[in-house]
Length: 438
Image 1 (cartoon, rainbow, N blue to C red):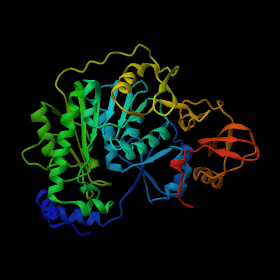
Image 2: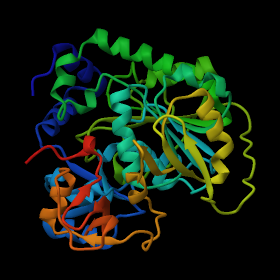
Image 3: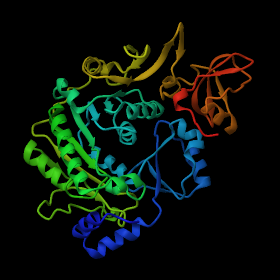
């Protein structure tokens, strides 16, 4: 790979010539392929199917992460579309270790959440009665986030499309805020050629300033004693250690140590005068792409009011005001969701159960994806691989029975709804999500 001279000088200065050469050699290798299994859907049987095709090994710092020996065509795997797993870069799964150091939260914000890797990871780890707000300010990316959250199938998530400043009216609301900040992308050069082409020292400075603005803007919504997890996929200290030091000095934050095992080969701070606990994933030391994470804590004592009910209750319906969609939410979340609706722009909440199209009310795709849907709520029809791919392409399919709204499945995993008329089945899979390849 050919790197800009300024980038090469930067890395030589940070690592030294010998280690920089080791990193260069690592970057010439193929990127690793990794997935994270959905604990609500990813069964041992589905993993066995993958294992029959590829050699699978565990990601050391992730309870649900798996490396694959080769990259399959995920687009042509119905299990991927059913939300049985998420394709995620292994290094970024280290977020799990940070979350495990935090007290049990009531409300968590993933501020820069698209396409959904960290949000689905958070949702897999958090207790059922914790509400996750997954936010993405750019509408096109927010729609992708919404798709992945729906496929994950957990009712305890709200997807919003807002800029950090829009959260100001909420006040101190969140126990944990995750900021996977937009960055210069140095850690993805091996996989993302446009990031390499766009790199410049000026862009690094621009990114660092924007990252500071994002964290400073959202900081007032973090509860006293709450935790902010800051991450990037870049190497330079300007966007990493120097920003963390700035947050500590300007916001009065304290860094929080995350226990790690020696064999994980995680690198610490590369800034000589900043020996605080930060965590770097370097491709010549860890199996994955470049990644940086630090956790900081706000001054004060975190006070979380206990929920009035010991278990989630899905009996309350909340009408989503934008898409004529009827949603089912956990009643414990209703007060905070009411505030979110008032001040933010929600795209999805809880489990959408139905939507009005013209004068018809149709079952929503989110309902078929839900982990809470009773197996006998709707008739089911099992599809072959060929039929499943036709369904996912939004093509017409035929099933023998039963008539009416039916959930179609592949290997026991729900893929979505059809309306079976007998002579044909109207395909209700969201057209915007369809497989576009023949």
